[in-house]
Length: 203
Image (cartoon, rainbow, N blue to C red; front, top):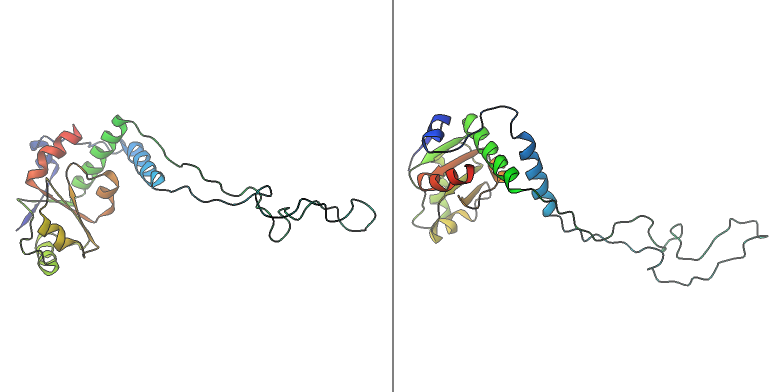
């Protein structure tokens, strides 16, 4: 297998909607990436307030006359083993982005990578023997950078098996690849059978 550089003219010929303006779509990319990262947060951090920790609510000593500072119960945040003041509680960090913004962000991210010369095209991508060694050899022949995103319409089980131990490469179908993945990898290889789906997603 071999790969050739994918230019902006090639993208237009393949019916990709590209964004050539430098500033258009930047905010959309930012919004989508931030939303994706926020949606991965579990939001399960939790601390106990003074009302939830174990202990008596008895006043430790009388208010006046002892010469010591006035104090309440042992569950106060100033005591070891007391509650936590203003600590985190479980909540959702999820952010929503509308479809138009998502589509613009995908179009912008792919266009920027094409304009930067980071995208190459291969007729197809498959590793028939399912061996990691064969997968690495194929990558070396297709792209010079070790951190590569490979996009195709679909991959067979042998190819997935060969790629699973290569942490610097990722196989993604054209219908599932997202903005964050387009930006993360040093190089991108697109199989020709993915053109129609990618063109539809950038329309």
